[in-house]
Length: 242
Image 1 (spheres, rainbow, N blue to C red):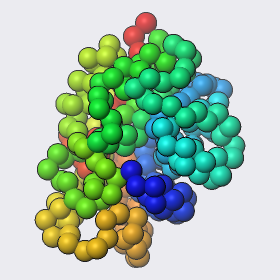
Image 2: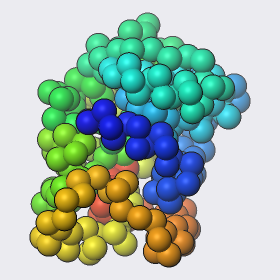
Image 3: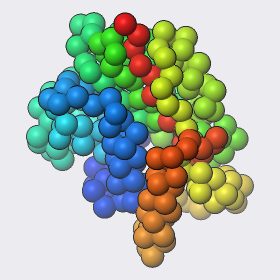
């Protein structure tokens, strides 16, 4: 990811509708597996925009390969004191030390040579019975300018995420699409976006932000009852077998 993108994220994460909605989505989907005062890992957590909420649930460790991201994480979320620079393909932790690990929009990066190896490492450091949660961009054909800014190398289907979990010995507990309402506008942007803007964060929130936040709330209400078969993002939760 471009270094300026980390700074953009840190500047807007508390007010941008997508980050707020994603934190709510993850909290709702992971709640059944969270334990009081648990140990949690924000893997590839960047500036903490999507994973720092876990510090309210227990002891949170954030790990990222980019020192600037962790510097911004510490500045923006001083309550998180467990910060580690590390390659997600070779995590600097002993086996079975976390109750859950979240990995949000990391595996799609071109710099990640083997998403399977990363998921294997996440499974290694989570205790039996704990969970690994993956949230990644979906719809393979929807590559656009923002993907170039974030150095995206791939997108995932729900089947892709399920296979990554199963192939690493995890039992799939939950798999769903998310942000399905964004698929049509994203498809349009993939075709017609020829502006100079390369990051979605450069787009003004405007009056549309409230509409999008409302759509995300409505979708989360649906997800409490049934999973979605697709979405601009895909989410899967795998349980480490005993």
